[in-house]
Length: 206
Image (tube, rainbow, N blue to C red; front, side):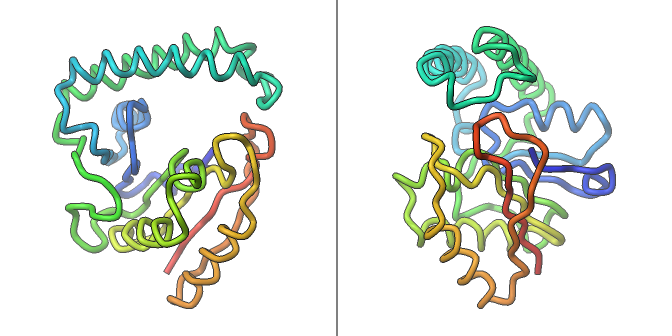
């Protein structure tokens, strides 16, 4: 979804917010200097494991009821995807126990990290996805904070809300404001498109 190359992963990478994703675990196994930040990391690992199981069931029900909103070429059906997500959640839980220092309990727009602490910040299924709860000001504050800690680049995916609706006014407004800050803000096509219409990401560079 982030169109990542080996060169993109050569430096420090931050998953923000990371949630119960196995990205950090998988990246660390490949030798990447990866870490994740999310407010849920303040909770005990056992509690998070229970929460993830509950979220898997809610996700299965959501996708089953709205299966036409997704492309199933890679995942087959909601049942197959749920099993894959369960494996991802298990990898996250195991790695959270093995390398707890890689998981920072914090929330946007305030990250307890120095300026330029990492090379690349990746943010998926948070901004734009929850546009019903986060207004334009919240989006800008979060993006500026991610830019602060990124030496090189910030990538945000997808650019649709949770129901699959495009957000042209929000996206154009955010991009215009960031460009006024001197940020190179551009929309880039990606090959990944599980949620129908989610074929683009936002790339930010100073």
